[in-house]
Length: 480
Image (cartoon, helix red, strand yellow):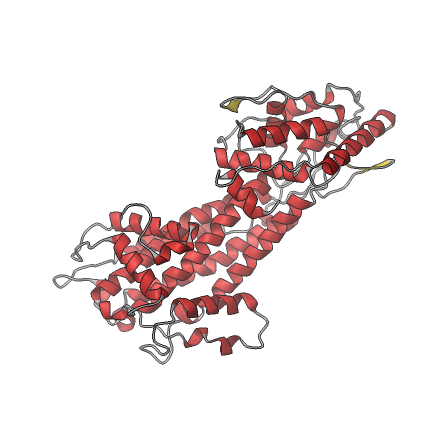
């Protein structure tokens, strides 16, 4: 399953397509039988033994094993996942089961697919994972599938678990991956919107396009930076090649380098998510005559990619703050200090820097690497954890904060263009962006006043641009 499809289906933008082919069901059946036979004749972790520190405790590999394990691991605590997040969990787990033998029975997989296709949404809770399999939320999902957990709306017909379903269904990071796919899509959109906001600031600051000239990037192996520069050149095609200064501030000149790193980090995150989705490798892995006990449940690569993404986005935040500072500085804007328009001492948009600084500090707070955390669990047996789950939630916090921070820059840039309309080119993509922003913010008097309504409108527009780049070529779609 493509990440794009998972996101679209989880958010109800595309119908859900069945994934379990005949070949997939055959592979599931073989894996389930192999694991059950091995458990009946010897030690298989989680089927004929306990789990965690109870790995040396023998248990009867009977039909009661799945329910006992799932009931004990379903914490049912923490915020409830909303419909999109819950559907993303189901879709991610279904895609993983369709990828190959796991030990999970075809009957449980079919029940999961039936629930997904029918649009059924189980009640799932957030707490209980540290990047070593989403044990609690998947135990809740398993119980819901067999009739022991609540659903929002009509519940699907309950499945009957097989003995092999016990640990294999839980041995997955589907909740982290599903949520991660949604967050990745949001961050890709916000980063694209940030380029549009930056282009407006370049207009407002009478910046030059020469820093984005393709000759600057020739023969340098930095395709992401070159791509950012090419997009900015296209956006600013009707703007002046040379600006008002010999050299623009770093906040304009280094956009390709900083945004290029963020683009590359998001590419690494996508690859890590795809690896978890396409090749899950449940523990133990059923093979003919053997069950391999391994550590593929540890999402270290995903956690590192999430850390890298959040850290790269700090640079995007820093440049947005710097452009805001330039916009309110008369030495760089050529306009009144703080873009004021009123009697002497008018503060204009002075408060925007404080709002942006608050938001930037919050972003930096959640950008700290979660992989630096140490966790030891189950009587010391599990002595490491990736904390990818915490990394996903931290990345979601960044995705929520960035549009509000970019709104501060957008409002200042639009105000500068209102104060000097000649800075808007006669046509082209940049003019479309400018007219779109000015229409969204409205013809509000420039005298000192509370900026809340305009900031909310600017944040809405950033989110619109993040969701649909075509918005830049038309009036804002929210009826403003």
